[in-house]
Image (tube, rainbow, N blue to C red; front, side):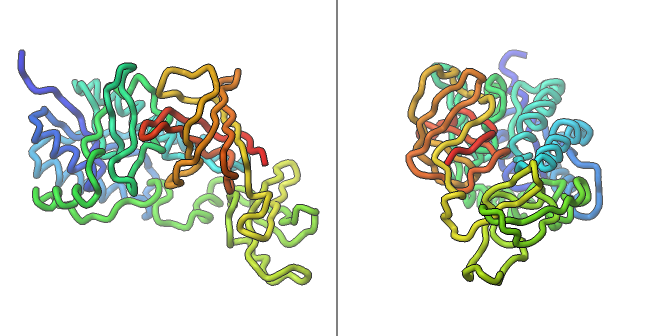
Length: 361
């Protein structure tokens, strides 16, 4: 019927951000329905999905909106978790949250929302969407401490036109205050930490269950053996601690840091000094980029983040023939890590991102 409100499906996670997202859309006059995604089916006491569903249901009841529940656990295992394990097995450090956003939340879930009759799909992400001359643009969230645009760098550009982030222009304190004033039962619920399939459990314990141990030498760059690691998968570049090699004769007192993984010899290379030269890189090379702008053909200046919460770093971007990029930084980057994402920005706009494949001193 002409003039009827647009239907928007909101991904209700059981947290305060998605609850306020649904509230704001209702206040705008939209036809709002909730959707709870179950992405993990191994209920071993660490994943909070069962409680999160009860919280989402309580929010939906209070707001008077339908709540759908859909199980994407098989898709998650096939499209996210399998890649997570393969990357760690290969000695790299993946970011499953980025892949989950692309494949699950704004992939199969977005399509499920469409089948429910939704014109758009909304979530509680702290990011903003602007409509520019070349289409929908992804921008940083207004709250710099909560900005989640980094995790959205791999979402397909075409999907942005069908997405909304109703709390992206708010500060976290505003979101909680709005939830409290509306009587939402999750107004003071703590933020979730990490990804569901790990939860609050010790990470090494979880990883060992799935990839096993593979002991090898811990060495200095000169080849001196200092100890034994239980598997390259359990360590990441720049890591301090967990090496159990302190107080070695012939070496100065001080922390040791993981500088490199020699996968051919299953050796972990460590150094002393927070800013040792082997921990620093002036450039990185990415795999194929997911561009959220028209694909550039010539070098250009931008800023980049090589990890979440890193301040923006000035960089010269050179597109490569294979679809990747070479990023040359003004300042050396510490612990640039293959498997993580390099995400590009111009001011607040996210240009896209790609997986770091190689690091150059």
